[in-house]
Image (cartoon, rainbow over all chains, first blue to last red; front, top):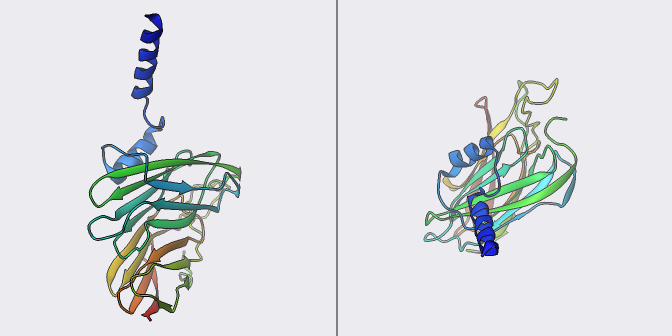
Length: 142
Length: 106
């Protein structure tokens, strides 16, 4: 059936697409931080304002679902900006002394873009999420 | 670059309950100049915030270009006993500034 062949091809195309279609500099930065491997897309929340007036001071919160015990805790949270001149924002190493797997900070965004947060757990699993923010005034080059 | 690093501002509770999360806020006055802007002054960046509890690392942050000027961080700790919490910011030139806060477990 032509229909089913079309849909199969569409599915193959979707699977082949990287998540999201990342620039090579960004892919390199992520690989440098966490290496190669699979991500789950749940258990992590990234909160950004829908629109940031000042791209130089954009509030950001990352929360990870984690008991923060010696047996299972977040060991690292990495933040990347997809369309800044350089993608690196910050990397946080956490220990079980951190009671909640949560960090809040303020970041720079050059323009309307997606921000990626990655959490690495003590059992080696990795989680990833993305959020989008509009920026009224760019915060990197002004 | 030559001026000394600013004094960090901390908001840490004086007391906390054993094993319960409490919030820490810290603000460090610093331009976080990436050197990428047109006509920018030379690069001047803090690249690390280290938080230790009685000498044991709790949080170790690597700060990169996307961290805003005057780096501000909020996080949550928990303690089993009264402890001194130490905060150290370091810049790419090797300078650092240290601040401490004592939390008593009630």
